[in-house]
View 1 (cartoon, rainbow, N blue to C red):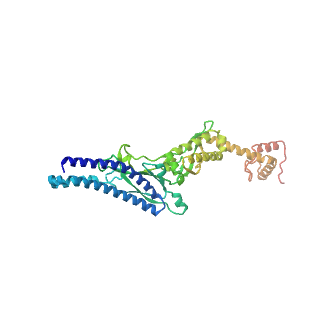
View 2: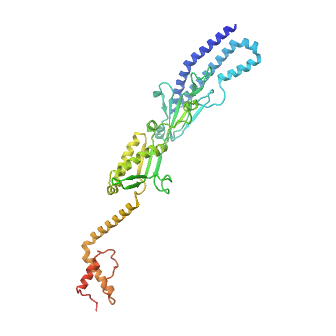
Length: 413
């Protein structure tokens, strides 16, 4: 076979293989992506079927690669054996290695195809989204809720299949994931946002400073708990997304990252949700003067609970509870004024309660004063009377006035 014929045969082989690869690899990517989603089925047959497709397509790749290599060897065998002898064998071995793979696997962008697996934990929701094709219809998820209803624990090993990326190499391109596994951690969340370093979830001040309608400073503390239900995991992902992998977005190692972690509930609650709670709390307090805010502390929390719950529901989060985590605090002069007014108000209530019995109280007071003064009366009534913890402030003056007007005081003789 002449040299020109060999070149022509080689060119035809390369072009034919390129056309075949251009048609086969996209189809393989879609087939593998679709098969991978079946691993979430509660079925041994689906798991076996998915693994069978992985193995068969991987084997088919190897057969095609070896067939191309064998055809090249057949075309050039005579001149290789005649002209290069042992050196040609080394070159062919190296060339074959580039066709069949080798080297360290990176799982997401590599010349070799190694198994890449992820273990879905009971507190996680996992979604498999094929990279190409009708992935709105072919994406799947692990239904942890169904496991729960059957009193079972939801956990599963998931294998991420790879396929050659068209155009990523001459004969042997790079293997990349055929889809992405997105994981949402549903671990429940609870916090006590307090001011004191000795209480609450954090040692730092996490209280909420607000103002009443008169501009009086009010600081409040909040306790809250939330969770993400299985059926709401997709909505939660839609609003809060995933944590992007670190690195340059143009780097293949970043582009073809296989597993993405959704933002944690704790991260969302400590950020966006805490800001929303702060706005709602201060809006309720700021709409009222101090006296009304103090009087409506429970209705205020009821309104906050309704608004926070409605906001979280639209984001795929369930509010488990929310409430005050401590007393309201004010600037010290305001607190002192509140205390004085409260004490005065209580004095008034006591005085009003005792008013109908003022005459009786004064009579008893005079009688006790007389008994204690027998043999040592100095003209002054006692200032403290046993058994009477509170009397009208003018009772001493009233009785003293009566004595000065000539009222007789029995001596008992």
